[in-house]
Length: 102
Image (cartoon, rainbow, N blue to C red; front, side):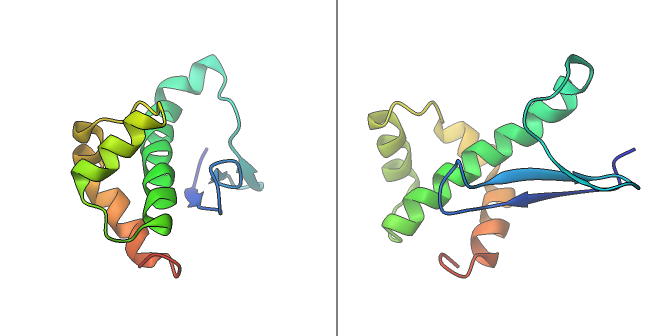
């Protein structure tokens, strides 16, 4: 049973991770088994969107929503304005707690 989870934001997407804790240990999530995919996917989507927003904001802190969506489009990253707005609370809470961004 999962008792906690955590998102670790690194310098890049590759340096970042989703972690879960059971009563035995912490585990870094890589690829879920089929039985856990439905639980993993929504968390992964939040993580994916947030880490890409982090990368953009670290480069240029004065971006607005339109700028972010345009940059994603040019980089061929499929994240829409609706995706960002739906996850805005999660994204903002993590941006505020990051010493390099917040």
